[in-house]
Length: 114
Image (cartoon, rainbow, N blue to C red; front, top):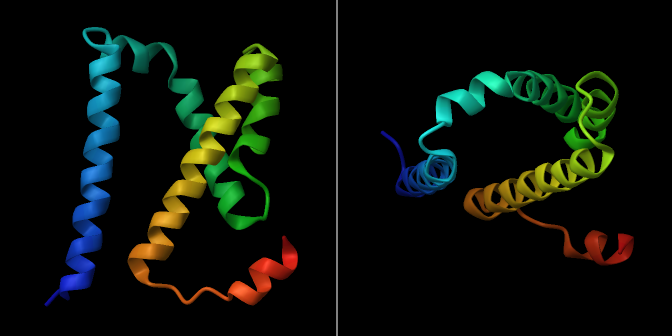
């Protein structure tokens, strides 16, 4: 049996996923499939970038930036903005996870490293 807290966190995660996907579909409609076909390399880059970022202390955007600029020929300005957006999304997702899981935060350490 799933506890009430876990079911609430699953609902919040599902709701956020639906909002993001819905926004993306609305923004790209009626060419949603065409966008995926044109930019599939970005998804592959970010899959491996997120694996490396999750296994190290490096951010996913820092991994993706050189691939975007050197391999995929994306302009450095666009790659920089995308990297910052990815970092923001990741940090917000981590913050939501910390809040939903009620992870004990050591505020003394956070204040000390600021």
